[in-house]
Length: 145
Image (cartoon, helix red, strand yellow):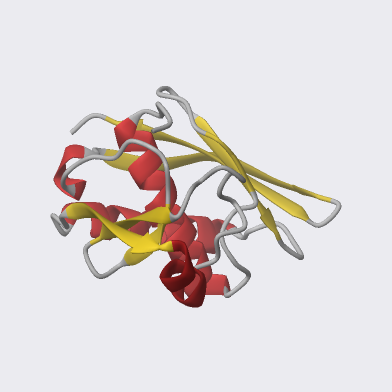
């Protein structure tokens, strides 16, 4: 299992699902997850507006406050390929694929650490965004509860 900060890593999942629901452009293709601040990159066509940034923060924080349980489930590789995009998993992921479910909000393959419930996360805050050559970068942090 990859040693990410559980709060930040779980938040990355919530941010990814929020971006998918708001813009339908897919999950991040690159992420750098750290305890103090993190960044994610999306294939995108423009910079976000202030209104969109505010809405993303609101939606992610509403999900955090929903007290959703985080659980893992294992699928055979064949089953997982039918339901999930496995392209970000390492080549040696094996035949049993670990799927992380955050309530009914998000489910995706993952090898990282996570919280047990979203109420452990704290407040999500977007620090900055920038856009260049088809890539939208979002930098974020968490404030303790």
